Amino acid sequence: MPIARIDGINLGYEEYGTGEPVVMVTGTGAPGRMWRTHQVPALTSAGHRVITLDNRGIPPSDPCPEGFTLHDMAADVARLIEHVGAGPCRVVGYSLGAIAVQELLLARPGLVRQAVLMATSGRTDALTAAMTAADLELGDGADKVPPRFAAYVRALQNLSPRTLNDEDRLRDWLAVFEMASVDLSGVRGQLGLQLIPDRRPAYRRITTPCLVIGFQDDLVVRPHLSREVAESIPGSSYAELPGCGHYGYLENPAAVNSAIVSFFTAGRLDGLVAPDEPRLA
Image (cartoon, rainbow, N blue to C red):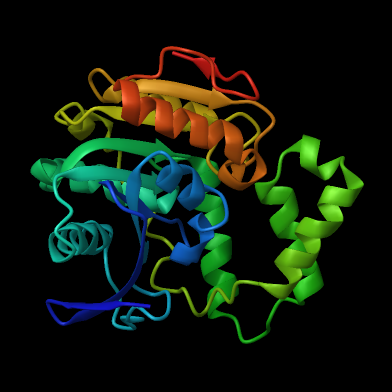
């Protein structure tokens, strides 16, 4: 894996394919390889050069135990775009990564041609604050959560009822969660960064064309929060995908990939996204 040494920070990244560049930014605790199974093949097949990033706090990027901010994460994306000579480019952000991309659009708009913001928000609501406080307590605690229990909770939080009710698929997800359990103490620097003030007024200054994607069954970032972001960014498009929880880009990758590629091609998302029909606005 290439390592970019930028302004004293090591950032891990991967590149795939050739063509118009797309930089992809993951959420809390997730490595860049999360995009590799579904989104990277779809985007490279559509003629894009894809650059995935390991956010600071995720190996092999620096852990930065002294702490860092959302603006640091946005600056990392900007530095990586410049390091690989990709700007101006398209950027895809998911969850915490999408919030960082929103700050990038305000700070360095010239680096981004189009942006896709998935499972994002522009403010902290009561449930987000409660979940974050609980995660911080778990991360700071001496006792480790048993992997099987952590997998069960992770499934309930992040998967849709459709997946939870499909026993074969659920067994596969639980096995993956148990094997790849997240050590919250290891991603301590990222926990709490989604606790943001109301940024919606600031988003009215964003001029970059944006597609916001919400997931109908998302319990972590409820879709109305994502819709609020779309309503705040002038001229943006919004798609809400049914049958998807917070991990919608993994639960129904065909619909997510179709939305992204269609948006990059046409500049807006005005039609239905196969195979499931999203609610568009």
